[in-house]
Length: 249
Image (cartoon, rainbow, N blue to C red):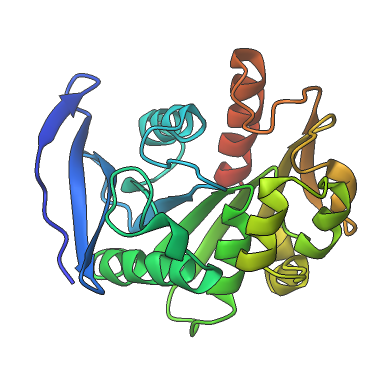
């Protein structure tokens, strides 16, 4: 497994640097963007996991949060890794072969490499990405420390979400193949104090009503934007996420 810097670009007066990352495994290349703080001596890394057909590498959701976290003097973050799952965006692979197992495998290999340098992780997952994080945490040993988990419009209860899909909805057949009837929310019970859940109150892709067990820390915003990318909404939840990560709990 190899991670190779391809290009480095100075950002924000040389306080940050960017490189394109490449992890080779399973005869494919998993690629993404690494943004690193030049001055930080932290051992904490942020890993962004996109949702259904999402691109962590370029999504405004993750771009804005990356900058806010790395440029905040109050948060000791070493780097943010935004990777694209196999078969999507920058990464190799066949999209139609994606399963929850291959998505978890992608995350596992990313974490394995990062843990060569870092021992503390903050996860940020959007929509289906929350299921991947949940499954990953329940299929690995406790060999790293979870600082915080930020869940954006999480599609955790795949069983209940079937009720909100029309019979001809392509997303329904995809969920049926990818996640079946599983409810991933219970797999996060051990991390509840470290989780911040943020959701639009009018989200029609993953209705907030599908979250049957409200998490302890959450922010409900007034929007129907599942991606939470509307400028005002994006800024609102980003500030909340930064504040939550700053807390010592």
